[in-house]
Image (cartoon, rainbow, N blue to C red; front, side):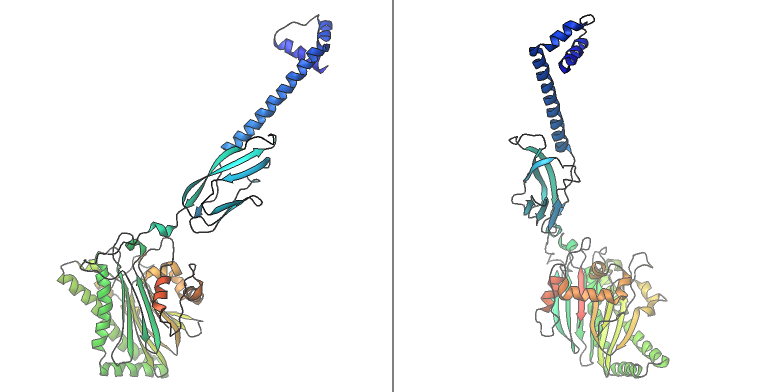
Amino acid sequence: MEARNYIEALLVQNSIQIQGKVAALDHFANEESNKNAVQIIQENQKLIMTNWILKTRIDDITAQPLMLPNGTVGKPYNGSVDFVKWGWNDITEFIIEGLENTGLNYDEASHIISGNPTVSGNLKCILKFNVVGERADSPLNEKVVTLIINPDPKSLWTNIPSDTNDFYWKEDNVEVSDNFLDKKIVVSSKRGRSHANVGSFRDDDFSYRKIGNTGWNVVAVSDGAGSAPSSRMGSKIACESVISFFEEYLTEDIVRQLDENLNLQQRSPDDANIKQTSKVVYEMMSKAAFEAHKSIADFATKVEKPLKDFHTTLIFALIKKLDSGYALLTFGVGDCPIAIIDKDLTSVKLMNWLDVGEFSGGTRFITMPEIFHSDKFSTRFGVRLIEDFSYLFLMTDGIYDPKFVVEANLEKIEHWNEFIKDLKQQSEEGNKIDFSYDNENIAKELAVWMDFWSPGNHDDRTLAIIF
């Protein structure tokens, strides 16, 4: 019956009249040769349909847009070949070629590509596969998928030495450690990657000094404005002039008066004593700040350049061990923080406010005359009497921006404790600093730590730590 129906449909399709010829059609369809011919035709039709479905399925897989996760040279990679997500449940055999000598491998059991990429670029991965319906000896089909491996960002930066013949040249990187009162100081100042990449100069600077036999020590840190062509000289002059000022200003009489006021306030911190101490400190510290401004202005006049070419921030701290603790006197203009951490690492005191926010991100500089005429000038000074402390930090925004991100975090002890852990042993790069007093390599360790990677943060970095 199946053969008859097929033959009848074939005749009608070809406009052959069969009306009145039913008996002949029945006889014709029952002939063995015709029945066999119909069976062969139907089997071939099924084969064609099967082959067509198989071909279109293979073509669909080959043309299917796929995205493997991007990787980065030197960073662990883990990318899934997700058969379920991609609708590949009908794949019977599967291998990947093209991962040789890349640091990556494909695990057939887990369908995971993993490893540490050693080459960058658009890797052409050849996915070879069979699907359900193909013969066991069928050659594997091929699909090319691109796996993007980005280069190590650090490798994109060059380190071009600055011009040593430049009139304002200074070393690209400086690190030092020393005694400081009955504690230690370690400082590192590093040219930022953005400067090293083009062979320009380190704009940051620092200086510190024991002031004769006064018992006072001073440390200064400055950050030259990136937009000011001679700011590297401005920052250098600012720090050095602060040191020179205190060396001349702290005479025996001045030291005696200052120490008496601080000791009195420490013993009896009433309003009268605090007010008197603040007056003495303000007079001295304001003169030191103005001396930095004046020294830069005088130099600018001498070399016949505008003062704005030397724009720089400035922070400094004057410290002494008193009868029953430490006195810390500070000044700051710009966006560089000074912070002191108590002995138990349970509280932090930010000793200056930063010139951010109020000026919509535009910092202030010691080279700006209006700084000294502002009604907020007196708030730039700080006085702190403390029994003891674990760390005193002075830093430029090259450290502050990547490690604290926002100003509010500078007043949170948990962020400082994380920062200290980062310094000591838990940095992402694995570089650590041994803060033992007898560590002769501490300056080098800090300098190495200062090379930490932070996307988008490639400014000069200066960090001074008293501990």
